[in-house]
Amino acid sequence: MANQLPELVALKLEQSMRKLDIDARCGETVTKVSQSTNGYHAVLGNGEQLSVDEVLVCAGLAPNIALAKQTGLATNRGICVDELMQTSEKNIYALGDCAEFGGQVRAYLQPAVVSASALAKTLLGEPTSVVLPNMMIKVKTPKYPIQIAGISSDNHVSRWNLDIQADGIVAKAYNDQEAMIGFVATQDKTKQAFPLLRELSA
Image (cartoon, rainbow, N blue to C red; front, side):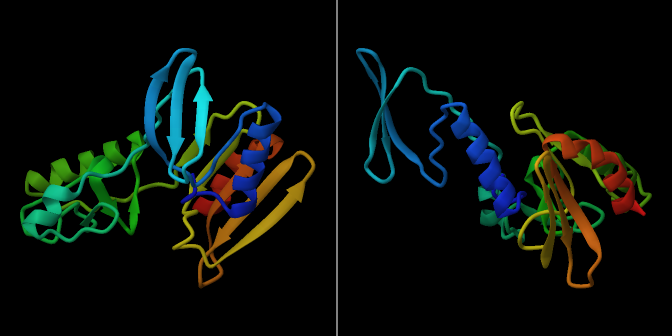
């Protein structure tokens, strides 16, 4: 989430977790977990030790680019591909969770399906560029729902325009040309997500 949420929205999500007595330790790693008589013993990267009842591992998605690097393919966060899903090496293609297209790794079903459909045509002799529509991502945190669309990662956003209300936040992302490229809506403001998506697609 750190790559997709403006800092204020991330802070509000963290605060909503704390209201549920969830002790959120952001930016910290777990270096060791061992079983104890009453549950588990966890050691954090900063040396802090915790006694916990259960351990749930949510590793997220990180593209495995080790083999691509060894073969000399261009990589960044993922395996870099062009609009045809072709890597830096002719006749080698990548798509799905490992592919970085337009500077982004889109580890979601819809981009993979759209990319696979275009790539199938390309491989059958009809070069077809991948054109991804603006897509909505729903963060299903019941006490603090969030919807994200377009581009919202900090390395692509020049500025955020925040509309902060008691019932939620609408954060619009803009690029260097002052064009809206993405948005984040929270709480009751998620009702505005589809009109915002239409605005983004206009």
